[in-house]
Amino acid sequence: MIRVLLAEDMHMVRGALVALLNLEQDIEVVAEVASGDKILPMAAEYLPDVAIIDIDLPAKDGLAAASELYQQLPSVRTLILTSLGRPGTVRRALDAKVNGFLLKDAPADKLANAVRSVAIGRRVIDSELALSAWETEDCPLTPREAEILRLAANGRTVADIAAELFLSPGTVRNYLATVVTKLNARNRVDAIRIATDSDWL
Image 1: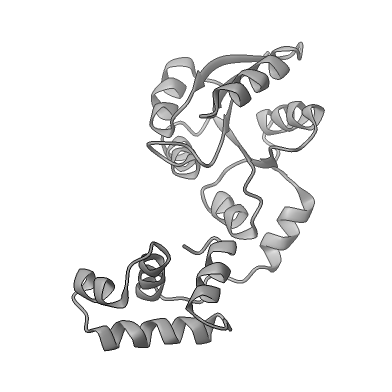
Image 2: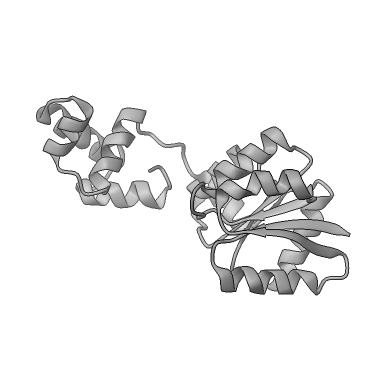
């Protein structure tokens, strides 16, 4: 019997997944949580074979929780289940040493088979997602450029960003101009879109 921990914050989705997985004769959901900060404590208590983790969780995102599991409970395999199929997200998942990455709109039997494969040590990643992640370049922005663009994406003005980071407004404008150039964007808004789609923010 493959013991599963399920981390999903949407109650109806979690309930449906638990019901689907428990229909399988060789899979049993032994624990379920609705927030990322509960994953490690529950995994330590129940010692599941596989943790199915949504990325977008409250309190702690799923990839951070998966990375914690890898470091502290390496015997627990991780399968990321998400609606976020962007290449940058896949790369982050691979960096977090997850064992599988599956989209939520995959057929139910694909999920059960992914759990079985991950449980025996195989890696399961949607082939098209894996290919796009492989072909996607690393973020060309420096940490400071990414930080400034992230603040701009959150609605901060140049003056706000300058005050927050102890920079002059002119320096902030120069950073944003450099970002636009590096991303081959038309303008600042386009740069934010490109960086967001690539999961660089």
